[in-house]
Amino acid sequence: MAPTKNPHLLAWIDEVTKLTKPDEVMWITGEESQLEDLRKEGCSTGEMIKLNEEKLPGCYLHRSDRQDVARVEGRTFICSRKEEDAGPTNNWMDPKEMYDLLYSIADGSMKGRTMYVIPFSMGTVDSPFAKIGIEVTDSIYVVLSMAIMTRVGNKVLEALGDSPDYTKGLHCKDKLDPEKRYISHFPEDNTIISVNSGYGGNVLLGKKCLALRIASHLGHQEGWMAEHMLILGIEDPEGNVRYVTGAFPSACGKTNLAMLIPPEKYRKAGWKVYCVGDDIAWLRIGEDGRLWAVNPENGFFGVAPGTNEKSNPNALHTCMRDTIFTNVVHDLDTNTVWWEGLNNNPPKHAVDWKGNPWDYRKYNKADKSTCGAHPNSRFTALAKNCPCVSPEFDSLTGVPVSAIIFGGRRARTAPLVYQSFNWEHGTFVGSIMASETTAAATGAVGVVRRDPMAMRPFAGYDMGDYFSHWLNMGKNIPNPPKIFHVNWFRTDDKGNFIWPGYGENMRVLLWILARCDNKIGAVRTAIGYVPNPEDIDITGLDGVTEDTIRDLVSIDKAAWLEDTKDISSFYKLIGSRVPEELRRQLKNLKARLKR
Ligand code: OXD
Ligand code: MN
Image (cartoon, rainbow, N blue to C red):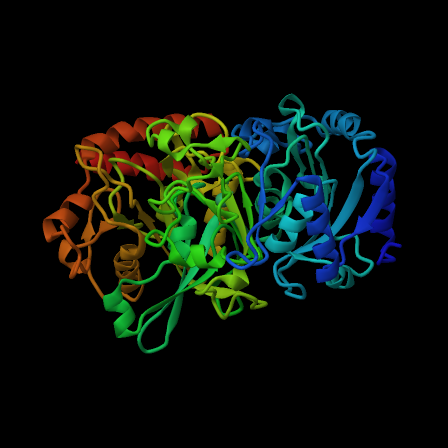
């Protein structure tokens, strides 16, 4: 029996049941015993493998279909009523046409299967900023992943009461046919339909679909922002905590930065870093005139390869329990998992992400086809298991933001760090962000593409309107955060990273905070303020000198001028809705670079 009397919800579930024709309907209550039964069932069908309970308690391995390992931007649609409201950076289809197409795919697609109804909350249930969603799915993997990534169950139904105000999410695995895969959003109907995929980013509908695409549309209407940002807190030795958000494209180190461990020198002095979120921030103007951030998620859907004791020990510890690993290597000797970059001890007796026997001796770093784990293999882990999770993680109102950081993966142009002149210029800096593409989405890897505010795949409406929204928000925040840009990925002539990165990024964060507190000066350049080299603390850093920093913050004006051509083409692609203020910013940048 349905655990709700909400007439809107019951009518919709009835409609979906008649359409998809499952054998059974199960409401997810959030009770551990129900989830445990589903884990057992998932294991009995081979959908999940239970891992070593002593070494990895509560952990499971899942392998996705081989053709279904990443987000599919080419098959992701924003079906607003008017095409121009989706804008040129989104795929669009007329909502009626798309509904017809999706309903024809969903029709009878759950025959012989169970349909699970997952009430979920993005944000702490009872927070005034939380948004409720109902995901209907025929996948146990989705249910169990949603129970990690979001708050699920009856408590959400209680919070919803009889209200019609929830996001409808329908997910049908169907036959996992890549040709019939559609990740579709209907912002004006607060509805998401995802068919023929089982990959997290396409099917955990609370995440990219609701918390970014639908939420960015809602935020535009309601005066707040949904951003592809981590949130971290930095506590100084006196116990003051300041919060910073960071927008980086997918698989560019957000999780690593969000869980950073300060270098020993700072730890000894009493500095601490707390993780509030690693992927999504919802930002609102608080009554005190500052910008406040909540992380709407309940867990981390992190990239496994490259996660290790050096790059992110906190993530490793987080996924030592209650975690679902997807598409990693299965170590048969210990019934544990492994991935490239975890350590130098690949398992000797193992199965790769495709389910085939894997011979570690044939592994060749340069040839991705020899990898045991898929480059976009993932861990889905509970935030509460993270050793550095913020005490404010469940806060109903979030945390106040002192600085916003944009960043990308750029081998050359972008310096280690620079500060924008003001909010309008900061919005411009975000709008011209570019990064090398990664395995998080299907398509070529390593190609530079413009990814404004790291939101190109996630803005649920026109990108030009999104820029205007940023500018308008800035006008309405009495005490706005300062805006910065970082690049950990600058390389030397031989292609080696110059900056050590990881925990050492704390040194850059401290420069950022000192700038927020107006404690230190900086050099005004054509692109913004860069550090005086002596203001980045390099004590104890092997092989990094003041000259290294001078080089890292140097601006190659010719390369930047060349880059402005690409920015102009990108603005042209976005079209007439690019706000006048940003066009003026681009003109001024060009003029400053020519000086
Ligand atoms: C993610 C992504 O999974 O951005 O967070 O693709
Ligand atoms: Mn992301």
